[in-house]
Length: 489
Image (cartoon, rainbow, N blue to C red; front, side, top):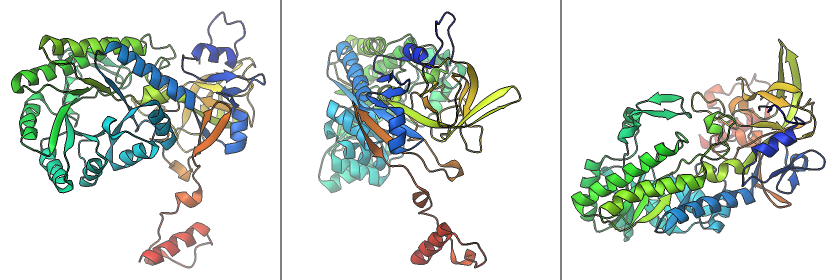
């Protein structure tokens, strides 16, 4: 956290003020603690434990509404904003977005079930994946969602499943998009500068235009399949507006070339996700992203539409698959301070949360720089520079050189932008159960994902008969694993 010269009182409270974006629902109470909507973090930790993921219902709704409005203003046809549930798979998150009218992007049977558990309209949902199982295809056919085909081989498999089900399935073709201008590309996310086209060609997803042309003909021969359009996805590789526009322009140019070759005019074009947010931890910088979602929407729409109109094609429905833009700043990870260690000219503030809960932090090149702030004593002067670290057996640096007030055992810290790829990517290194997640709406708070326990963590463990010696010290969990092994032998 950088302290700006000239700040009259360098406190967490005034730093937070300049970090806030339009949809954040974070504030500082009269008791100098962080508020999520109308609930203080001390109250949340007292009720639900620490560490704790906290999600704002209102921020989710605001982000969805803004991205939808931005693309509806820029696109002359209909728009389907499809929440990418891999970003945050909590049923309650999906339920909020279903209430708001969001479609959904799913990978595999689990994400299909999670999407429909929170509520979904089958006409706005698509199944993605480069190696879809027969189970996933059958479930997608049963639910009646769109299926994005990733290979010619899928055509016959899906047609057979649809035939057995006695139904017709709507499909799109996923395109492999490699813009020529990407010969000079810079990604802050993965620390890359140069020609990224070979890497995009190596990615497992999508088919080239030649293969797509063949697929159009083959799908037309299958009475069980209805081809509706195309799908493409790059992801948040860079916040640069021109890069985003170049990708979408190439989608439009590819669709146009296929139209001229086959006569097929897509009713749907899905341009995937990957839009950077205003507070953009993927950039690994504290400075805000200069582009707004309205800027991205206008650039994407113009770039995609131009080649379609030049070819005299009808305007298709525009689909997009944001995840991090919707859920990113809706989440905060709250943790409790334990030992404060000073040695070797350094200070380490140990907390009860670790990078296993937010694996993107410092995860090789593809990491993020999330803001770490004091969540109590927020009006105290920022006199401490410290690394905030977790208790697991790797460095687990949640924040490096953080500007903090003097903190002590029992104080709280907060890690911002914890709504994306935290819970979905978290793991249990050192056999540490993962914490609960609560959602806040105004003054209300409710658990939406229960905390794990050691009982649950070890429930699937088994000790086979040849390892069941009698000399081991008594252990509830060993007895549990032996008993379970006996039951399944």
